[in-house]
Amino acid sequence: MSIQSTIEAIASTLPPSTRRIAEAIRENPSIVLENTISELALACRTSEASVVRFCQAIGLSGYSQLKIRLATELGREFAQFGGSLSYGSDIVETDSLQEMASKISTLEILAIQETIAKLDFDALAEVVSAVDSAERIILFGVGASHFIAEDLQHKLFRIGRNAFVLDDAHEAWAGASLLSSQTVALGFSHMGETKETISFLRVARESGAFTGAVTSARESTLVATAEVSLFTEVRETTFRAGAMVSRIAQLAVVDCLFAGVAQRRFGDTVEALKRTRDATRDIRGV
Amino acid sequence: MSIQSTIEAIASTLPPSTRRIAEAIRENPSIVLENTISELALACRTSEASVVRFCQAIGLSGYSQLKIRLATELGREFAQFGGSLSYGSDIVETDSLQEMASKISTLEILAIQETIAKLDFDALAEVVSAVDSAERIILFGVGASHFIAEDLQHKLFRIGRNAFVLDDAHEAWAGASLLSSQTVALGFSHMGETKETISFLRVARESGAFTGAVTSARESTLVATAEVSLFTEVRETTFRAGAMVSRIAQLAVVDCLFAGVAQRRFGDTVEALKRTRDATRDIRGV
DNA sequence: AAATTTCAGAAAGTTTTTTTCGAACCGTCC
DNA sequence: GGACGGTTCGAAAAAAACTTTCTGAAATTT
Image (cartoon, rainbow over all chains, first blue to last red; front, side, top):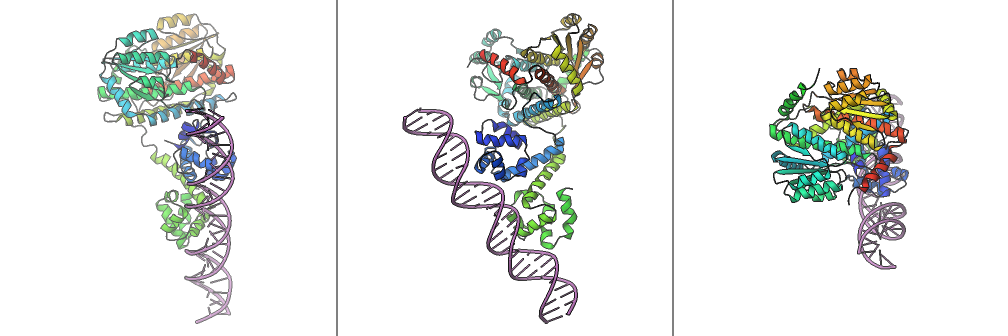
C-alpha cells in the first residue's frame, strides 16, 4: 500500500501534534523532500521527536525512510498523472466542477484501493463458498446500502443463483425466521449499527442460516452478530460526503464476491455473462 | 536531464576513485537508496569525501540530494515499465480470489480515472443547472442502470430535490408525457441502446423537458435523443464482465453531478448532508 | 480526586553527511 | 634529479540531521 494512502488511513487516529504532520504532508507531500526533519517540525509547530513518531506510526523506521519512500512514490505518481493529483483535500464552496470531480474521484479510487488491499480473502472465500452452495441467498440493507443489496441480487440472479433482496424490516424478519442451513443471509450497513439490519442478521442466524456482514465498522454490533464480515475502508473524516465513497467501496467488495461465485460455478465468468447478455440483447431495440 | 543520463555522460571524464562510484550507481542505482554515504564509499573502496565530490560533479549539492533525486527517478521508471504489468489481463479460471480482486479493482480504478479525465464539464454544468432549478427530476434506467437512477434519486432527495425514479416503461411514458419545461429527465443506459430508456427520453423531450443521458456509447441512439450527454469511459475489451466496471464509472459521474447540485444549493455540501445524517441517526439503534 | 495512560518536547545520544586539510601522486620545468 | 603547480584522495574534524530517552503535562479512567 502506498505511503500516502497509509497516511490518509490513519491520519484521523493520530494525536493532535502528530496529525498536524500528517495534514501537512497530505497537502503537500514534497515538503518532506525539501525540508529536514527540524524544518518540518518547526513548520508544524512541533518537535523532531513527533515527526519520528509519525514516521513510525505509518510503519517506517524513521524520517530518512519517509523521504525515500515518498520520493519514489511521487516520482511514480508524476509519471502516471503528470503531477496533477490532489489528495484528500475537502470539497469547498469555491471549488469548480473540475476540482470537485477530481477530489471525488481521487477519494473513490483510494477507497477501492484500500478496501481491496485490506480485504480478508479467507473471509471472502467463506462467503463465496456459502453463496455458491446455498439454496437461497437473502440480502438486506437499508438506505444507501439497499442499493448495494439490489445490485448483488441482480448479478447473482443473472448467474442462476436464487438471491432475494428483502424490502422492509418486517418482511426481512419474517423471511429471516424461515431460513435454514441451506440459506445465506447477508447484511449491508456502512456504519454497522443499522437496527433493522442487525435484527435481520440475528434472526437469520438463530434460524441456522449462514450470516455475513459487509460494513466499514470493524467494531460494530453488525460484525458481532454476523459469522463472517467483509470490511470496506472509508475515511469519512477528510471528505464529509462519505456516503458516495462508502458505496463505491461496498460495490468493489460485492464485485469480488460475485466474481468469486461466478468463477466457481462456471469456471470462467465469461460463459455465464455472455449467456445472460445475449438474452437481454433480445429485448433491446436497435 | 535525468540524473542517470548525467552520470552516464560524465562518467568517463571522472578520476578513478570518483568513477568507481559512478559505475556502481550505473549498475545498480538503488544502491544509493539502500546505503549510507559511508557504506557506499566502502563498497567502492573509497571515502565519503569522494562520494560527495561525485555528487557535486553531477551538479547536486550532496549525497542527500542524490538520494531524493534518484528515488524520484526510479519511481518514475517503475511506473512506466513495472507498474503496468497487471493491466488488462483478463480474469481466468485459475485466478485466485486475490488475483481476481486485484484485476477487478484495477479496472474499476481505471474506469473512474478515465471517465473523470474525459468528462465534459460544460455538459455537466448544464445538467447541474437544470437539475438545480427544476421543479421535478425524473430518472429512468433499466437493469443495472436502474440502480444508478435509484442511487441518484436517493441522494437528490436527501438534499431536498424532488427526484423520482420511474419503475417500468409504461409508468415512464405516462410520466414523461406530463413533463413540462420545469422538468429534467435523465436516462441511464450503459450501451445507449435500451429501447425503453430511449423512448422515455424521446417522450420527455417532446413534452418540453430538459433531457440528459448518461452512457458509455458516444454514437448511440440515446445520445442522439438527449439534449446533453455525459459519458463514461469503460474498457470492455480487456475484461468481459464490463457491467461491474461500467456501473462504477456511472456512479462516479452521478457523484459529480450530485456534488455540483449540492454545492449550488448549499454553498457547501456539508450542511445538507450533516442535516440528513443527523435525521437518519435517530432511527438507528445503538 | 487519585491513578493511569497517553502525548509532547527538551535534551542527550547516535548516525550520517559535509567540510577541512594535509598527504600522496603526477607531470612539468628548471 | 629536484622543486613546483596542479590534481586526487582519504582521515579526521565539524556540522548537520536523525533517533532515542526521559520527564513533565494533559487527558482519561477509576
